[in-house]
Structures are given as structure tokens and as C-alpha cells.
Image 1 (cartoon, rainbow, N blue to C red):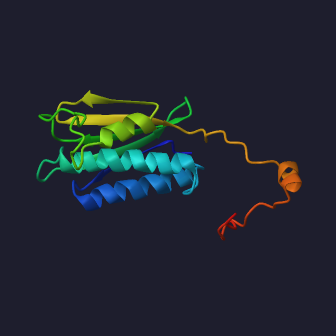
Image 2 (tube, rainbow, N blue to C red; image 1 turned 90 degrees about the vertical axis):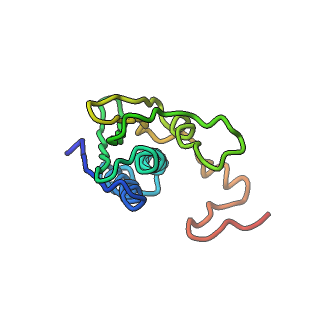
Image 3 (cartoon, rainbow, N blue to C red; image 1 turned 120 degrees about the vertical axis):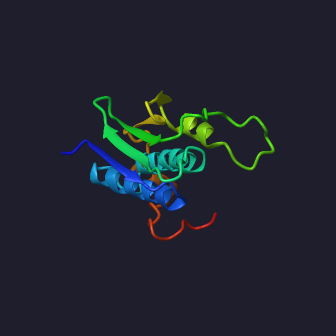
Amino acid sequence: MNTEISTRLSATPRGARLARRLTAHQLDTWGHPYDSEVNHTAQQVVAELAANAVTHGRVPGRDFELRLRLTPEDTVRIEVSDARDDRRLRYVTDPEADNGRGLILVSLLAQAWGVTERTVGKTVWAEVPLKEPQSAPPTANARASAGTSPPCPRTPAPAD
């Protein structure tokens, strides 16, 4: 099984959207379905890092790079590299700001993240655990004693 992919994308909003879609597809290929928590989390991290790359790290005529790699520690390492090295990463401190909270989301969603300087530009990386969160569904006996059956996944549960 191929445990790493790398691709260059245009430093445009379209390139950022494509990065998110490629991530969803690749995680599905690696056994983490589109509707899984792991897939959604990785997509969100990629969306934030790619948006930063095309908004703040863009150099005209230069692409950004997306790299996804499965690690032996059961994580997916996400790397987004851009060609701009004169802008440092920062958190927004103004609570009234309309944007700038992407890195806060990355720090909450990833188990680890950081920045690696390169000869040209920088790479922002994040590691997302591949294990699904443990949430025990109610047992069949608990549902039977409550007189309920599990709701159909395609129809909303009845209102109480």
C-alpha cells in the first residue's frame, strides 16, 4: 500500500478546495471512509492550512504543495508547503476580527503541529490520529428496556 502522496496545487481558492477533496479521497483509499471522524478532521486541517497557504503564503506564479503520509504511530501527517518565508504564523488576538482563527482550529484538531523552514518558503505540518474516538453506542438490551429501536440512518429520529 502506498503510504504517502504529494502533489502541487495552484495557490488559488480552487487549489485549496482541491487539496481538501484529495485528502478526503486519499483517506478513504487508506480505509477511513468519507463520513468518518478521522476523514472529517483531516479535511478540516487541510482546509485551514491550504487556505493559509493561498491567502498568506502565495507568491505569484508559485504553487503550494500538499503531502499526506501515514506514520508508524497511527497518524496521518499533513504538510502544506508554500513559497513565502517572509510572513510568520500568528494567532489572532482581536476577538472582533472576521478571520484568522485557522491555526487555533489546527491546534485543537491535531495531536501535534508546527512549522519547518525551508530554503524557499515554509512547511506547516500537523499530525492527526487515525483512531476513531471511542464512543460506545447504547446496547441492544438498553434500547429494548427503553422500548426503542435504533433510528434508521436515513430518516430523522422521532421528536420526543
